[in-house]
Each structure stands twice: as structure tokens, then as C-alpha cells.
Image 1 (cartoon, rainbow, N blue to C red):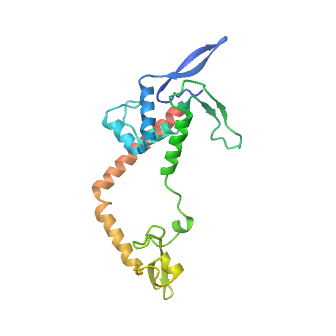
Image 2 (image 1 turned 60 degrees about the horizontal axis):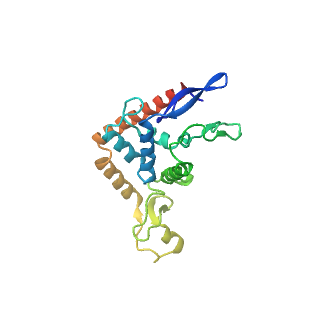
Image 3 (image 1 turned 135 degrees about the vertical axis):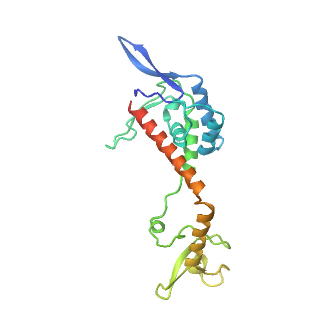
Length: 229
């Protein structure tokens, strides 16, 4: 067993014949906080919302510092809270992991763990289609038609001299299938960029983003060091 005990547990040694072996046992009141975090996730609350709640209430982490989204996510993805110990889950040799059930007291049930895992997966960002990622047009795969809701794709005219965003309904079904006109690509892209610069990429927002990123990176590095102990 790793020297690192997940939040909510403490590592103790118990007699096993002539030798002592490590075992996890509940660590009140941290174990109750783990239960509450899973309950909030089961209620549909986001990781960001859970993190803000813990920090607003002044609840310390195991290191006495603020909660980070990475910390909360790691907890919700940790199967140890079901009482199981798993070795080799990330092995690259293709061998199945070794699993020991009921190795220590559980804080949540397996069904609750699977429900939370499913909720986290449903909120994960979807992987972009490679054609969208490699498109030279800024809004490819993003822009939607206001009239019918279908995607708008870039279409070139006069050998690439002009480019427009055109509703897929018009492109596939022909004239009269949608009332949204062709949109000049350069004009609408410039409009979007100007709006982002004016309302999103402000100096204060960028400062807050850099601060948040620094905190997330510090938290991830701290967790990595703990797991290697």
C-alpha cells in the first residue's frame, strides 16, 4: 500500500501474524467531508461549484490550503473511497489491474462512485473533430445557424477570393431550405475577435486567469509529490 493516504483516511499498521502491515482507516471528520463532496456531486453540482463552496466555508485541505478543482476531481475519481485497493490500473503491458475489494472501510458505495464517474464523463469537453481542428477558418465547427440550428460551414467563391459561412441546410438541400443568408467570413470573424478583446480578454480577466492557472499547477504538483512519497 502506498505511503499516501487519501483525504478522509489515515494510514495505520495492524498486526498480521508475526508482522505488521499498513491499512487505511477512517479519519474523522475528514471522512464526513469526503461523503459530503460526493453527495454534492451526486446532486449534479459541478466541480467548480463544489470547490467554491469548500473555500467559501473555510474548510481546509489536508495541507491546510485552499481547495482546487484538480483536488476535488482527483477525489471524485478515486476508487479507494469504495473500500477497494487497485494496483496496475495504468499499466502499459495490457495486463488487467489487481483489485482487492473491502480492503478498508468504504465512505461511498460502488453504485455512487459509478454514478459520479458517469456524471463527470458527461460534462467532459468533447473531442474536436480533426477536420474542425485543422480548418483555417476561425468559426468552423462552432458557428450555428440562428434559423434552423444547423452548423454553418466555410465556403469559398471565385477560386478562393471570397469566403462565406453558409448554413448546412442550404449547402445540402439547396435554395429555400433556410432563410439565413451567406455571411462574409472575414467580417464576422473580425466582429467576434473584437467582441472577445473588448469583453473577455480584458487585463483584469487575464490576470485572474493567470492566477487561477498558477494555483491549479501548484496544486497538481503538490498532489504528484504526495503520491510519490
